[in-house]
Image 1 (cartoon, helix red, strand yellow):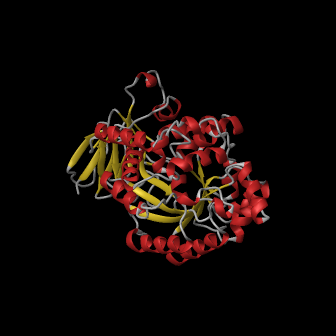
Image 2 (cartoon, one colour; image 1 turned 60 degrees about the vertical axis):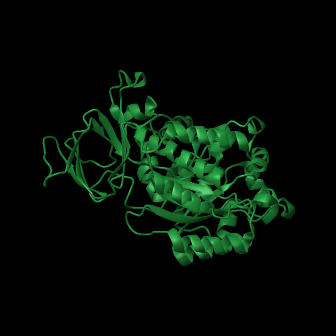
Image 3 (cartoon, helix red, strand yellow; image 1 turned 180 degrees about the vertical axis):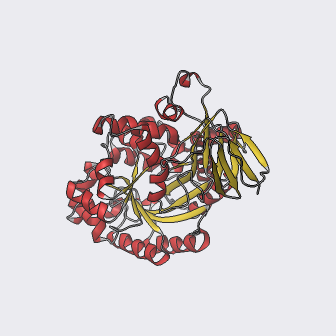
Amino acid sequence: MARIWIKEPLAVYQDVVADCRGGIVVEQSKIVELLGLNEQPSFPVDEVFDARNLVVIPGLINTHHHFYQTLTRCLPEAMNKPLFPWLKVLYRVWERLTPELLEVSSELAAAELMLSGCTTICDHHYVFPKGLEQAIDIQIAAVQHLGARATLTRGSMSLGESQGGLPPDSVIQTEADIIADSERLLKSYHDPKEGSMIQLALAPCSPFSVSEQLMKDTAELARQYQVSLHTHLAETVDENHFCVQKYGMRPTDYLEHCGWLRKGTWLAHGIHFTDEEIYRLGQAEVGIAHCPTSNMLLASGTCPTLELEQAGCHIGLGVDGSASNDCSNMMQEVRQSLLQQRLKYGTEKITQHTVLNWATRGSAKVLGRSDIGAIEVGKQADLAMFVLDELRFSGAADPIAALVLCGAQKVSHLMVAGQWAVEDGLLHIDLEALRLHHTELARRLL
């Protein structure tokens, strides 16, 4: 692997003070030097990459997504509905998922994320109709093909409509099958080491789609294999009411009851908490995948990010599924977070630095990783590079702020573990062929 000097970038985003106007030196998969202005690398390099026109930031880290939902964007029957009715419409479509559909939708979602500056992608797959038992294996192959770093979560649903749950029985699995497959996947794919390209977590979909026993058994399996736990929680008021009616307690209490209120757990959305619940979540260092676009589209509410962060929670960003976002663009999600959160907290408390930190270092902490999320010596060389040559950027005085405030959409270059994954705005796959195939499959599914 080459020793690369990313020379004299236009600007570099860091959340710590360090002079790197002279550039960044990468060797193998790591950042090995940060150079001040007019400084030269300590050792000879194999490649000098001219970054004079590029704004460099740490690779963005997505903490919540549903790849398969790229097939059901803007579905008329599901539009303009809150979460529960929206899900009931879409489950009847998703029950027809096949291995081919999942493979293509996963590759398209991953490609979309990477082109928006995302180096570590995360997915929560929990729909397992008959014939899709190898879903996570399919997703792993897709992200490896593209060269992305990934945290993939083995989702599950065991509580169907016949048992008082929300999903139809056609998309659920038995609890024995779920636990057995979770253990198989952890043994086969999970790599806990520094610089890992594939990590797994265990992720029952939500309190309204799995049994109490499965929540507890999954927590025990995660403890045994030392992996993280993930689920949707406190996304809507309806969910809170469901938990009270079914379990006699609110979602946070139920989480603690099932052994989930602990470090290594992260929650998607995390909107409807009381002050006391926020305190407990912070004490346990629970992570929150903040998904502003989805929350706005479904009118679910606004995540209390600053209260959660002050209490001790880690805050990361997630695009959520493309049926409740309609795209998978992480840079767009950064901007959406800034706009939404300013409505709650004001302009001085939510800045471009706040939201970029959530999308990088904060997201890394949510996923339990200390080797990514920042441009520092010793960190993995995961870098997103943008060129400000579009009309939207003309006149922008601050290059870093321009990425967020002017609305950057696509990277020029993307590096993952020291390897070029995107060059001159192009992934190393035929994107047009992928798009046409994906479009045809989506039409067939509907």
